[in-house]
Every structure is written in C-alpha cells, then in structure tokens.
Length: 111
Length: 113
Image (cartoon, rainbow over all chains, first blue to last red):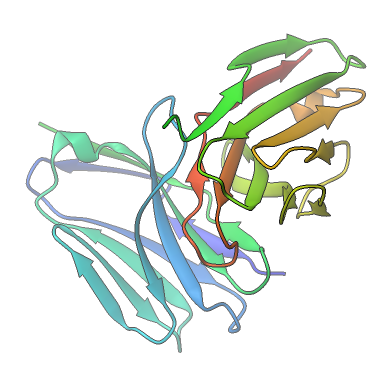
C-alpha cells in the first residue's frame, strides 16, 4: 500500500521566517495531495491541496509544490505568524477512499 | 450548523469493556469516516461509509465495528477494548468521497487501562 513519510517531525522558527515541511510517497498512482492543519484540541482542517497534474499551488502565505518524478511534495509557509503554530499533516490519495497520512510536523512559531 | 460533532470527548475504559463512539454531521454528507491518531503515526482509516446502511473496512479495521443506520450518524464500536486501542479517534465526512475535502470532528480521546 501507499507509504507517506513526513519530515521534520518538529520545526521551530522565528516569527516572520519561512517554514518548509516535506513529504514523500511511494505509490506513483497517487494523484491528490492535501495538507491539513491541526490546532490543539481540534480536528484536522484542510489548508491547501494539489493534484498530480499541477506542479505548484499558492494561497496567500501558503504554497505547495509537487515533484511527481521524485515522488515528493512540500508545504511552504512564508512570513510565519504565531497563529501558524500547529501540527501539520500531509496526505496522499490514490483511489477509492484510501487516503494515507504522514506522521505530522509540529510547527512552533516563536514571537 | 454544527458541522461534525463527536461524543464523548474523553473516556476511560478497562480492558475488556465495550463502548460506542458517536459521530454526527448536519451537512447532509454521504460519506463518513473513522480514523485513529497515534503519536508518530498520523491518521489511519479504520472504517468508512459511502451512504446510509453501508460500511467498509479501512486500513486498520480489526477490533472495531461500525454502523450507519441514519445518514447523519456513524457509530464506532469497541466490543472488547484493549490497551492497544488507546488513541484519539476522529470522525470525518464529505459529500462525494474520493478527493473531496473531508471535514473532521474535534476527536474523542480514549484511554484503555
């Protein structure tokens, strides 16, 4: 089955700096890659996603890039703010209802 | 519009006890999902449902049963709880399944002693 690896597991940055989280997947048939943000005590919430026919997608301070050849995709957050502090999950979707998640990255933005 | 709600928020069980976790959504979604979240392992799909009266196994279904008697509710049952089932359980839902955005509930924290 699909295997999604996510790095780093923890990331600490200064407010205003950029943060990058990377994921790799194993199944070349995966075609949809969402990113979720989970705040303390809450469920995950979709923040951005990308499909396999697109190389990059941007939404304000958040961007995602996809390299299908290398089978990896990344989340980029620019001008980080304290409210960006949360756990971020990547996921890869292949078919049916089989979504596989990475282990998560705990991002801390220091004021 | 409450979205996806889960009850209870927290529960402590002894090994061998049974319990049912309730998920409810008021968005008229067809698809509903149960995940478990363990440290260092992300979210793993336990069971899901593609509509009222249907259920299907996910990645880690053993030890769990589910029922979808009403479209808005998805129940997750543990017949004989084990310490390995200590986890945080999340319910999610969406209209059409597949790559459509899943909306998650706030989670249920379960501790099995």
